[in-house]
Image (cartoon, rainbow, N blue to C red; front, top):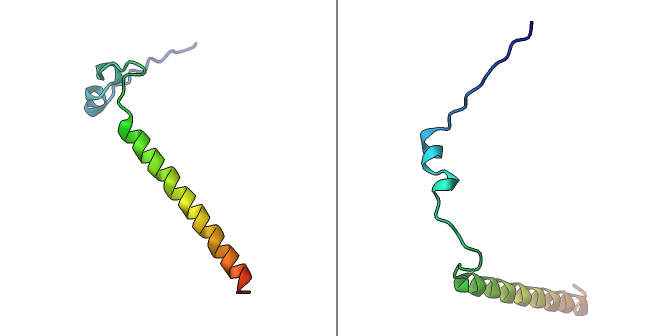
Length: 66
């Protein structure tokens, strides 16, 4: 004899309050990304200067036999 078991899962109240279907609809291409682009440009600039500085320090150490 086989028995079947039905399981009912209830999400906690905070999960129901923040359900995806309650979120405002986002249309692709409508988000303002100016701040994101400025941050990314700053990050790339910082990493470029960090790499250049590291290479210069390594060259200096090689020339001074450190």
